[in-house]
Image (cartoon, rainbow, N blue to C red; front, side, top):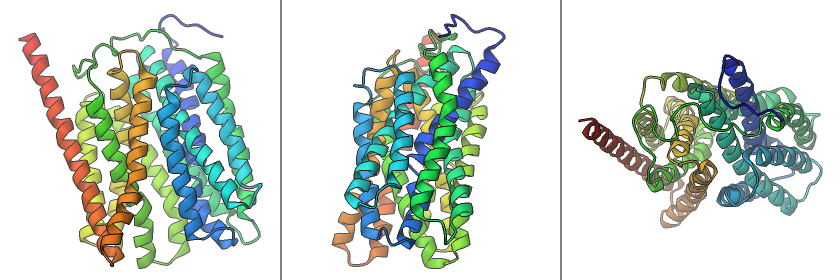
Length: 407
């Protein structure tokens, strides 16, 4: 194993290696392990393996697994690099196993385990990758790491567009995706084994970040991140349904997923470079407001342009929020990064799980599906706006304290 005590001239090449490994980790664990079901579900329906009700059960089991995985991530007594390696190896096996069976209960169990593994991978990758970037003095490269989720989504989307031929079954595609995941996982497995722990950060980032925000209470961050989960999942779930009602062209839906992934990947890279000058909490709050606009738009104007705009607003902010929130949480954790990142991920998972539940509850009170969806989207937008206001006020308070101390 390599032990590096301080950054040197090799910090940029080493940071590039860390970013590449972490990017591929998220691409495998999230893009394949968690989100591959989205483009493959229609193909499983095509093959007569699933219906809408079965798909809903598989999605719910994955949400529940993600929640429990996040809750227990901090209790797993493994180093982030080890937890990451375990998550990636098991993700490959679980992905392949979906193609080896045709049993709905077994699929539900596999999707549950995939949810657990993706939560572990996100927490472990964030703790390991961001820790290394802080140690090397390259925190602005965080966007490259979190571009992994969008990269994985785009790669799976393109794979499904190319492979979704009448003579290719969904079972075969699950196994082929597992093979691709195994190949992509080789890099993070090797790098994580060679460079398991970053050591002490080169800068004082853990004590105080560039914006002057000292480590402090993280309960508010967890609450805001939970509201983000609730606000994100509703448009992510129902925008495709609304779009399908307006346009029934398979080619449009076939390319929608890779385009969504590309937008998510590019947004983190662009915003990460901008964070050299911008305030991280303010970027977080602004992203919540933009997502709120994307959530609210289909509720007041149902048309193809509005759905496209909403998809861009939601898709262009969901990984930006993840990136800046994970960075802010790690900085305020006082050296306990895995714990706070696990709590934030659990909060997101809980909010995500509550989204369909609340929507269904509203649906029972109204006979009209469109009206119920409108109310649910409006509620999600309100939650995002409230959390944005909280973040802005907290940042203003931190700025006031900073000026008072220096005054």
